[in-house]
Amino acid sequence: MIYFIISLVLVLVAVIFALSNSEAVEVQFLFWGYEGSLALILLLTFLLGMLTVLLSLIPGFFKKKSVKKEEEPNKEVEVKQTIDNASQ
Image (cartoon, rainbow, N blue to C red; front, side, top):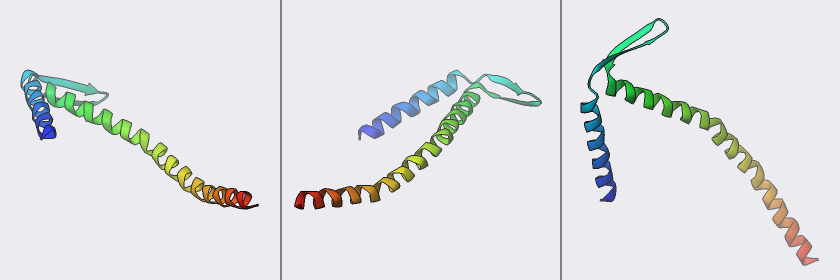
């Protein structure tokens, strides 16, 4: 229920933001130009930023996963050696 309330508040804030920033603005980048509402352009910019961060985190995620797989066999060997040393 709490997630529903939080989601409802966030949607309400987004709607108020979109209604408050409905002016048409033009964005130009090199030879490309786009005209749209300020709210839409800000939303697209935010989503592109999130995508950029997500793509930059992916290599580290896979590296951590591969290092963890490499460490698992080493832990088994260490446990066996510890057991052998304790029994001697």
